[in-house]
Structure formats: structure tokens, C-alpha cells
Length: 381
Ligand code: PEP
Ligand code: MN
Image (cartoon, rainbow, N blue to C red):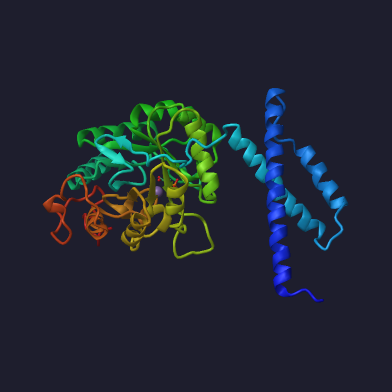
């Protein structure tokens, strides 16, 4: 008598269970192997042995599965075994969520990982006057976290590279005058010590997310680190880089999504908004979003910020310059001070103190004139 569809289904069901039983039986043998390897100090993962097993399986493959498919299926099984061994031997990510509570990182009187925070300041530190003005106005608005690059990683080696240590000093003094915290990038292992003398938070830029020696070096420091996602890095690679820092003892890592490179040209990068909730599930570290470097333009910053906060970000980073038109880097994406005041209203983020009256949008700004003679207005920028 012909088999019915139900007979086939029952047969498949029985086979699935048989395969499952065998897979778990195999996993138990893998754990016995692990115990033996540990007691005899043999490496856990032996690629040569894996290749031999795959070849043996292909040699015995009678089809209908192709050799390629057999390789693929067993590669997955072997990988699951390696992961099991790593899990059992205690190789688990320090930055992994596991069952940990959200990490809160204190920077001055702000807590990153609690209520949303704003990190603002120019792309680069350019002069005493620029930093004094921006720090004064931002602090009056209630911003406590001041950003600015003293060492600038520029695509062109002939572009402005930052003021170096002089920039660090200028920024530190401006921040101290207005009760702010300094967030600045460190580009190189040789500069970690020096930058740490001035900074409250060390920033690792997108180009250095894969610089493992630099990550390890900041991992030996005790101050918080903002790690920016590489513009071509996957989320897993991003977390592995955070792990490099944590592994050295510094677990105060703030992850910063800042856009990844795609074929889209309307924005400088594509803000990967899905990275925010995914990271929040995968790690207990706080996640912030740099909307300025993601967008590369000013008109969508408030929308991107709202989206980021709705997705679970603990803060927003933006570039603000008193006179963006004459900024020495990223001129087109930096907001002027009035635009920043409008931005804060639109995003609805609560700052440390209410926005000072004189900088409320539409209230008219005092006609501060920059050295080049440009008035501090949106038209001037
Ligand atoms: C910056 O924040 O100053 C910067 C250079 O950003 P990124 O590394 O994300 O390009
Ligand atoms: Mn910039």
C-alpha cells in the first residue's frame, strides 16, 4: 500500500528526533574531549583534525546531498561544538549581556546609561576663543559633556590634523572654566598617557576600532572610553573590540554607533539604527549615537536623534561650532549655537539646567562676532 503524506511526515518527525538525540550525544562526547584536553593541556581547537573529519564525510557521501552541502552542515556542527567548548571552559564575553543589569558610567555629574545625555562640541579644537565661546554657551544651556578633537584623523594627510597637545590644554581649560567634562580622541598608543592627563573620557574613533593595540592600551586606563563603531564593522566585530578594552580591566566602555558606509550618498554614512536595540540585547554597556558623523548634514539631526533615543540609546553626540562656516573640519555638518538650541528643543532632551533665556531659539542671539567678521547667526553660518 502507498504511504500517505502523514506517514512521510511521521517518518521525518522520527528522524528529526533521532538526529537531535545524536547531536546531543555528540555534544556530550565533545565535553568529555574537553575535560581530557584540559587535563592534558591540549589546544581546544585543532583545524587539521576538523579538515580530516570533513574530508572523511565527503568521501563517504552517497548523496543526494552535494559534497558542498555536507561540508556546510558539518561545519556548522563542528562550530557549535567549538562554541560549546569555549562556553564550558569559561571563555565568555565580559561585555556580553548575560544576566547583567545595564551598566551606568559616571562622568562628572552625568551618568551615561541612565537618563539620556548630550555630548556636544566642535569637530576640532581650533582656538582659545572658539572653545571658550562654545563651552560657555553649551554649559549655559545645561550641557556638561564637551567634545572636541585635538588630534584629528583626516582622510587627507594635508588636511588640518588638530592642534595636538596645545588643543588638549585649550579644551581642558575651557571645560574647567564652565564645569564641563572633556571627551577627546586618542589616535595612537604612544599618546594614551598624554591624552589621559587632559581627558575625562577617551574616545576611540571609527578608523581605530580595529586597532587592537590601542584598544588594549586604553583598557589599561581607569577612565571611561567611548568606542566608536568602525564604518565598515559588523556589530559582532564592534563588540569584540569593546571586549579588547574590557579584557585589560577597563569595563567602562560606552559604545557609539556613528553610521556605517553604504552605497547611499544622501548621507555621509548610514545610521544603523537597528544596531542600537541589537547592542542593547547583546551587551550591558551603554550605547550612544553620534548623529553628526552619521548624517554629515544638519537638517535631519533632530529626527535621527529622536529615532536613536526611541531605539534605546543612552545619549546623543553632536558637533556644534560657534561659526561652522569657518570650521577647519566637518564644516557642513556642525550646528551653530542657535541651531543647537533649536535642536535640543526638537529632540526634547532634558539638559542639566534649563536652556538659558538668551539662547532660546527665536529669541535672537547676541551679535557675537567671530574674528573673521561673521555674525553668530544661522545666516552667517
Ligand atoms: C569625531 O568624533 O571627532 C570623529 C572623528 O568621529 P569618527 O571617528 O566617528 O569619524
Ligand atoms: Mn567631525
